[in-house]
Image (cartoon, rainbow, N blue to C red; front, side, top):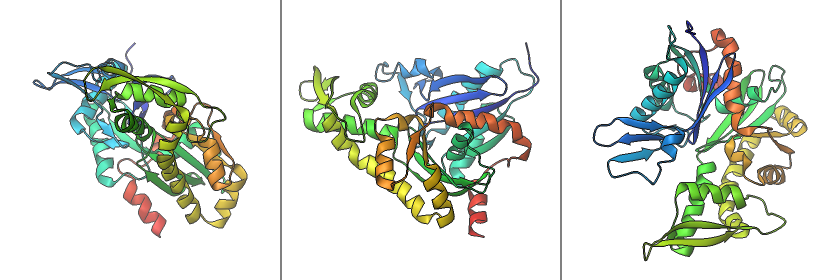
Length: 343
């Protein structure tokens, strides 16, 4: 049945794109991957179908991630990926949809404009931006209307964002380009350096989810990683255990906790006391890595809890923000917010 228009919320992530439709909930969840013909520039597949092609394409086809570190790295491919996804949802609509897109806290104005322009060219009528920690807080149903501080940490695929929220606004925020993909890269690096073996991103992701941890486990577990021997070029296997993975994860995990501590250092005493009482909330797919709540609680001395469904908090928040689109600012938000904080 054709509709006149619909409103959409998009979590435009480095690893996955999630889309929320007003009145329906989450209607699309696909990896942020595009498969394209190098000669013609034609997009062959997007999402899961393109993700299955990673490392398996012939010479004339390349499968790539058009987003990196939470922002657009390949503008044209991002626009084509979004256009294909929006066509799936609004092929028979008479009017283009209004779209709320989540962005990292540390995004620059140039990066914001790239997100807006790509979404407009993909088929949106109007584009509104929402910072990821604020969107996550909305998705968690936290009461942000009262003058009481809440600290939300969103660990995604490309970036980790921390924000102190109060009175329906962001009091303080910070972002670091260390997140889920960084830990996967550490696994690829350790296999290359210690075992002289090269593995793909899918194998690294599986190892990370199976035995990866950022806090010491009570027992040692192991798994098999498959790849290619760098000397002979032949297939090879290597056994990895949780202790050696923990050792290589300590550096990026410390970068994340250091960023959270720097946010706490800049927070006013009143908001800091509120956060100490309410605790820290963890969201994002990267937050599901074993031991993050325990590590952050140990480093900060503040209770830390993982959201019930951390991977969908941001897109749920974007969906809830659709109810007050008329009150939202269209276009870039980064510089305007910084000016207000300085006053």
